[in-house]
Length: 315
Image 1 (cartoon, rainbow, N blue to C red):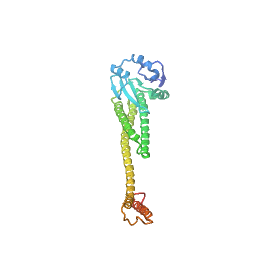
Image 2 (image 1 turned 30 degrees about the vertical axis):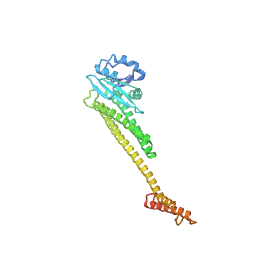
Image 3 (image 1 turned 180 degrees about the vertical axis):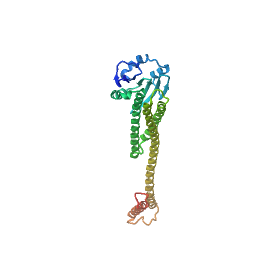
Image 4 (image 1 turned 60 degrees about the horizontal axis):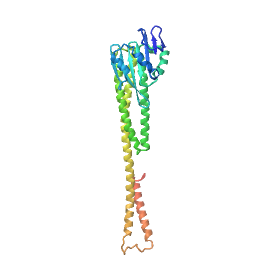
């Protein structure tokens, strides 16, 4: 538990969990796996709206915010590097912030030292709320950068082996993941708009400016997710195009080979007919003549295809 004192402008760390008695103090209490046993004893002594108490006890599956007379309950979701979702619940009062994470997000580890070294960052509950939101959004931005790298890697795989069936399955899985992420981030963006509104009673003018700056990050995340979805469609279409192009090349080669061997087959069939009167039948060089004729015919057709540019580079 961290407590900011407006009298001496310092932040101190306390082991005993309790709400500040004076309006000159701002408290931040964060619950995670290491102090989860203290959660129930602490909230049982809170005098807050029953719905706020229920919201603090339970994690919401979707980001949302409920504002009451003396407090507000904020439900957020942080996206992890493996794209799993971690639920966060925040209780905001006029001189305290209570946060609870489904899993340890290192919020206390990342924020305690900056708060102690820079007490002004805890000078208002709005500033405490801003830094918690900033840490959450920072993880979402890292997630966006990671997805960008994954999609670029997937695009390279298409050019490397367009016939790899795993690519299409990966595109399908990514589209489902992006759809879920977008729904979460879009709902979280709505929550941010409410918090950054001038009507939100638990921020002051200074903290409001900071919180409003976070809205641009959420807009960037939503836009990036839409771009990634379009990129996945392009990757899928690109794979289909490369497959079709490669198949056409194979069919073209087979067709040209068939055309080359077609007159050679005709010549072989012509001289293979069982008629007694065939001029070259008893000729000494008849067999060699037939072989050379078939070879010259095949080479002539192949050179003609090459000259036209249908086979090889041509002229």
